[in-house]
Each structure stands twice: as structure tokens, then as C-alpha cells.
Image (cartoon, rainbow, N blue to C red):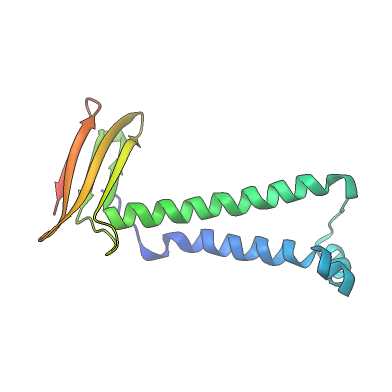
Length: 144
């Protein structure tokens, strides 16, 4: 099964930092300070005023994609999800829930083209996993 490492979210976090740093330097307040002109020259940018809305959309979409990647990484790590799409298998290895969450349901969780509905519920011994529905031939292996 695929093992997720703590550093898996690092590229997404780094991308957010870089995009924010560059685009932040060409924002309105930085233009007043002359910083925008320097950054535009250094990076060889051609900022056409009519394309401003497009730049804003690209900026927000870039940040949103990275944030979603971080959220997916955190959720799959926390719940111990280990998909093996070629083998039509989903491993759930030592799932955990935050202290403030007693249960969590994932409906329509995709493993390749197959789907499953899972419920994670806090118990005295840890977190129980209930498979509510799954497409065939998906196999779900739970290791508590």
C-alpha cells in the first residue's frame, strides 16, 4: 500500500507561499511603493490592464488547488486511507479522529472508478470503521 509521508504537503505549501509572494508584490499597495515595477521587470512580466481579472482568477485557482491538495493529504493521513486503484483495494490503517469529532462519514469515496461509503466513529478503544456501501469488486481492508 502507498505510504504517505509528512513531507507530502510541503510542495503544495511551498507553491502557496511562492504564488502569494510573487502576486502579492504586484498588488495595489505595492504599486504605490514602486515594488510592482521592480518585480514586473525582474520576472519579465507584461501586465496588460485588461487582463487583470484573468490574473486574479488564476491566482485564486492556483491557491485553491494547493489548499485542496493539503486538505486531501491531511484527511487521508488522519483516516489512514491507502488506495490501491489497480488492485481495486482500499486500506484503512489505524484511523484517527480529532478530539472534537466523534464520527465522520465519507460518502461516494472514489477508489479509481469504484465508490464506497464509510463511517468512522470514536470508540473507547480508538476509531471503528463501518463500510456502509461499496461497489464491486472493491475490497476494503481495515487494520485497527
